[in-house]
Image (cartoon, rainbow, N blue to C red; front, side):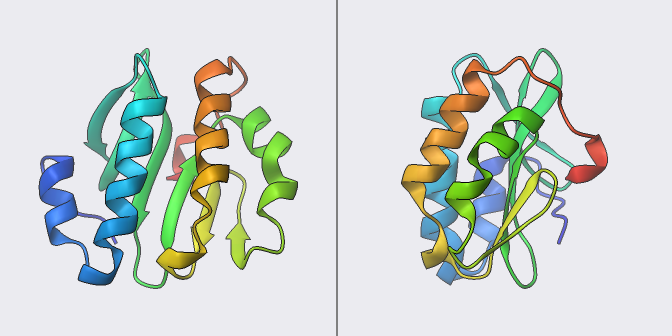
Length: 127
């Protein structure tokens, strides 16, 4: 569900109560792990850009929380860590059916790898 919120703070104020803590933790990890990235609201959700290119985003969708890791090499290198964890995977999207399914240690690894990556960014329609 795309939001019309102008800031990430307003976006987080609007999400369902049962998702607030998990989404706030995702934001905190993004802000601390992605040095030199700009936080903004794009594509209806929080996004993190470097050199004008969105590389990471997250969103509270109707039936899941989505984490977008748009560096193809990062997703491919970590795909096995996400299998069997009760998540659904797309090309650049990790869908968590419930907030408690988010493995924040793995998320931190994905963000660190994104920070270090210069690989290809998958299409903008991934968000």
